[in-house]
Image (cartoon, rainbow, N blue to C red; front, side, top):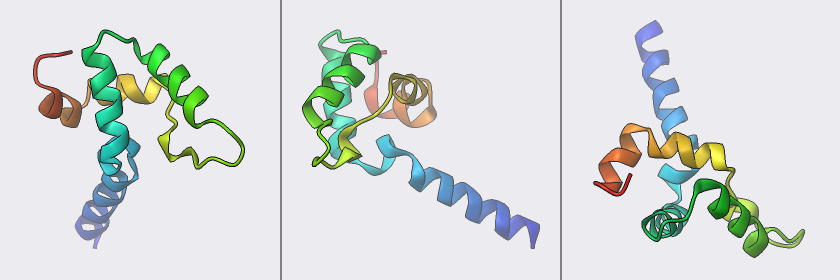
Length: 83
């Protein structure tokens, strides 16, 4: 049914978001935001630290993803008053 497919799609989208599904990455980003880093600085630093061709890129994220997380329900709930 349509309702079942809608719920399944919402669950799939929820699990596809890096900052929701990867707590290590989320913690690294929130820690840097708490220290006053901008999303652009965070994305750039993660790219330098984890950007090699042999490295796994699960610790890389673009600044738009960080902004999206900050303004999302998940971001507001997990970060409290830092944003």
